[in-house]
Length: 113
Length: 115
Image (cartoon, rainbow over all chains, first blue to last red; front, side, top):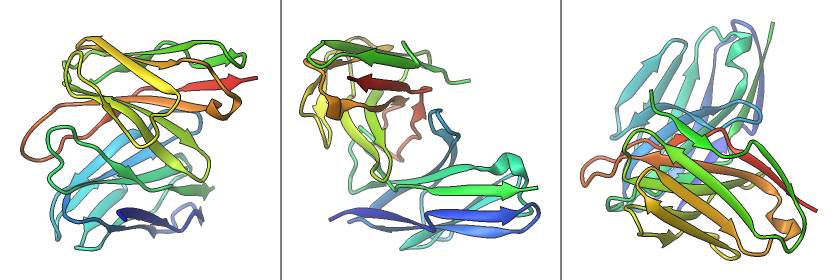
């Protein structure tokens, strides 16, 4: 069965303490991996798309990387405003034109000042 | 900027009522999606549509139906609301392409409570 697993479920960091979130996947053929940020009570906000192993994307303090089995979201010197739930999603197989995604359950990040 | 709007942020309905949730996107996206999000279960796809009047079932379509009469609008209908349909409902849209997949953009969500 196709699966997306995120770890840890929750992470508490001090401001400035860098760390990484993990997204591992088992799908028949990855077409794309997506990272989203979700604030409490709001819809997910798109961050990055990664298409192939070895690819990296960066935005401010966030950097996403991709291997054949997992993706990491690295957070460098986080600030309290980075506190949110981070979601990972994959599109597998041929996908067609409909772009169905399989979501993980997310990592809840809390950054304390 | 992509904008996806949903008709209500919060709704409270009674068991057995018919409930309509509406979603509108302004980016001329072909694909539109309805998800529900529950603690510990993540986002689960209810229905999606890749064109006007076209729809396909997602992973949990039971108890729901959808309508897409115009490209920018996608409606989710709960025919007879039940307490187990209490959830956060999220609408999303994306471009459709045969090549690399496009990212989905989400609306703010509707928190539905069925009593």
